[in-house]
Image 1 (cartoon, one colour):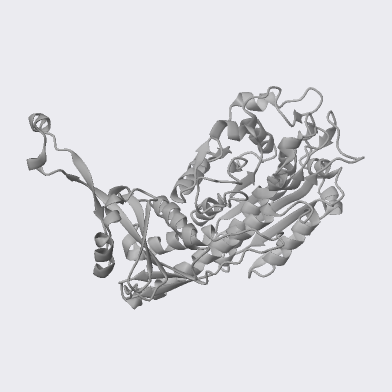
Image 2 (cartoon, rainbow, N blue to C red; image 1 turned 90 degrees about the vertical axis):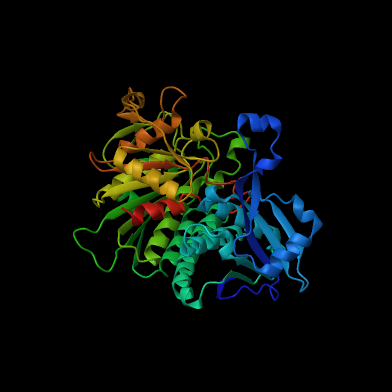
Length: 516
């Protein structure tokens, strides 16, 4: 599917399907029609009026001549479909109150309308003038995002592949063709973002027997090698032993596959003393059985998603490199599975972390923090300006924030605030959870320096975060994103699959790095 621009074009007659936005606005009722009670109170009952911004006259007249159109109220997401005499299908898309129109309203409702026709049409057109949100540039970018993300399908392992007739999406506007050149650049940049997010979704969706640690590392290396300015280094078991990553190795101990630390670097062409350096670290558990602290069967299903953190940071890294961002980016993926075997780590074991701290393993199912602890300590040696780690770390974050919101924790409030600001700008839900001194105290061990879970089953997200923080050097700004609730199956978002990887928080990370 290709997205094209067609400006100075409001002739819908030759199109197959055209999506046109309809807003509403509140107007005061005719004072002559007010009831006596309202007259006494000096109140006039307001009503909603439909606003057809920039609709061609013939398209609007046809709509108004259809008797059932009077039932269309223009509520957000409401659709009214009809045909022109030429056979063109017009989709009137309700966008609600024009004064409350937001980028996320447009993203969701346009994706929803697109989903209704992507399986039946060969071409879908969108009238940008009628859905305008802020500038034309912003509208174009949001529309391309919505459609590109909504068009994603994972059918790699189906014997009968999904065959969509859709070939083109066309963005129409009455604006002059001179505007097209700038908007084409926006479409190119948006396609880079969408393609990277969809690649991350595919990796997360892959079954664990098709994506074990060694295969995953090869896929990352092959993909990253195609991006200009990117360097890739992979550390296997022998190299991790040299790095003294005892926690990472303990998680891998029961596996049939070698652990893989993928180290990616992007450096902009022009580096000055003002060039910032961000480190992105992702949890890459290709499957998590829980180890010897075995998960129940119902909890083990979908543990292929436990590498979503690594896919998320890789997608953000790739986007920044391909857009030639003016920031140095180091990306580290800690990849293994957590399996059961003769050598699998036992609860009560004590392992030595890369920074020399001793760690008592109380629960082998609290494994992601062990991998991340060694990985953040490794990347800290490179002296980045800040570190962001992303992981499907705790079930506790779902209890706190549900399936719709990312948990954010960190040691630097200014950095946390900036991440939250970027999440809001990207229309992704994120919420800060607290870290208290008592949380640090609760992971202290009687037989080692620290233990990998708290003594009680409360504040699990915070205690997972403070464990990772124990391997961050003092003063180095660090933020942890717990995406366990939002990494998959975002059924409320029309631009995300109903089941499978969501790709959320990639846009937030890109926004954060670009504004570092």
